[in-house]
Length: 66
Image 1 (spheres, rainbow, N blue to C red):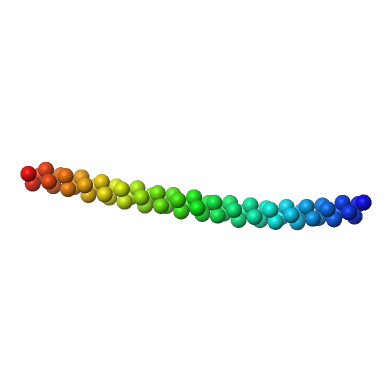
Image 2 (image 1 turned 180 degrees about the vertical axis):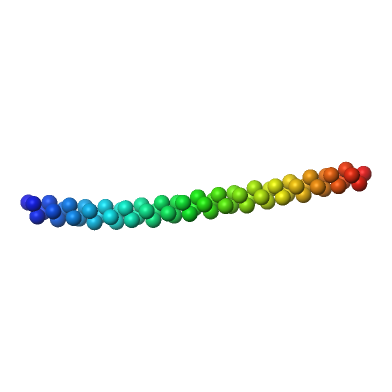
């Protein structure tokens, strides 16, 4: 019975290590996706600010010239 239990414990430990490795991989992938998402949002904000600045410049130029 003891050997059988030792075998079951070893099997459970091996399965735990596999699951722990899988969890680690998933967490790394999640962090990578979050960073990519943040970077894309920052790029979008920069593009939006540039567009707004261009529109403001055009309005000021139009108002100044008239």
